[in-house]
Length: 284
Image (cartoon, rainbow, N blue to C red; front, top):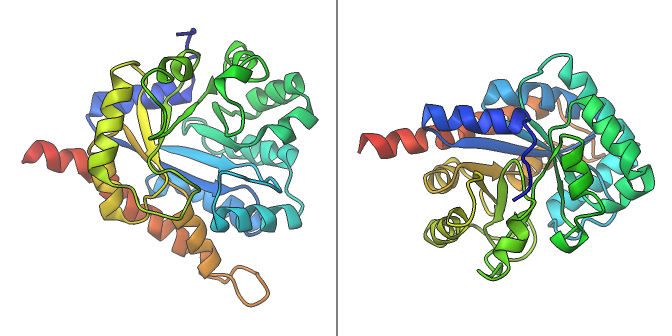
């Protein structure tokens, strides 16, 4: 395993371990449904219970994402959002919160166009702690993973139910920050995770790494979040939050006055489920 950069991510998971509780990770798309609303949601996530924050970088062909997140990307792009503007959002957020870890999740094309060296320098300066780049497998680690580690940014790899025991060590070799286990096969927001199945896969991953394991895809309710959090180090929720944004758009695609409160209200209920999971388990 490669050297692990010390970041807000590693510090936050260390703190969660000391507190004996799982973490809650939120995902929203930068600039969705518009810049102002997106920033207001971002600003309220930590207070609402998010332990780590994933920010989706809008991309026109998000192949791993389901219809909801695809639509959020298209709304953001239509509103003028870009990778450079996403970094500006992070930099502005850091003026208000210098502790909550931020992970950018997206695809390699915008980073390649930006220029890897320039992107990593700007991302580090903005306050980005980690990267999840869906379409860069370990075989392409020289493109971004290794340079990111050298720059002091965690590079987080995805594993899935289809990742074999023979494949897993290769995926984990240069993984850092945490391991993201995709609980279902297929795209985001289409099916629900099955806790019993997830527990087996999490155990399999833990047998080969000391990194925390976060589980995402297929988690939509506080009850599901609590169940998953009871067997993982963190639960990730994205599509349900994006769906909440979508549900509050008017006929012209503009956010209604209650959009921010609705999204943050859902975050609070999900966070309560996650944060109560291990406490309930210990009390029983």
